[in-house]
Length: 243
Image 1: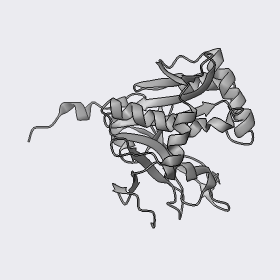
Image 2: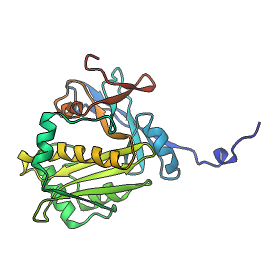
Image 3: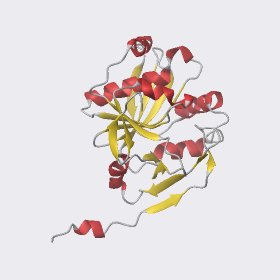
Image 4: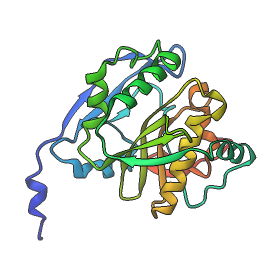
């Protein structure tokens, strides 16, 4: 039987199991992840993403928390998505914004916005101590096709950014940050709406939004974007409200 010789030339995958830490989503539980280094074989990314992994720099990871499978990989069908009344209102509120797609070369303006966002929204989180070099590494260190979607107001001021991966079947919102002073705009929600529109117009069906944890206040916003699928039991399945 003929075999693809390239399969025997691939370098071995580097896998790491993280230490257990406090779960940021469910009180009283611990978090643990398995991570795979794809720096020498970036072609594996899309296959692993379709199996529920997420990318951070050269690594993709997945929760493997003992006795818990609450984290469900979540992706939204951009072709079937229809915004409800509230989401339409948010879109209208931000009609003055313009989107620009740029390469992953962070600048001072983006870093200043990131710092403001972290200080106001996540001052007690894992990213609170990130310096400029850490920010640059987070943005630039990607082995696959990645871009930054920048959002500017009518005065040209940067108000939001989304670090976004391009996959064969869709886009993946890796990390977003925005001006915390403009709470009335609901910028986090708007940028997802815009990426869904961008995905649809680009002929890409899915927008991957990371993990969803039912009952977690931090994750509730994702449930607003439907129809969606979750990866569970080894396959992607339509998410049902009563699950």
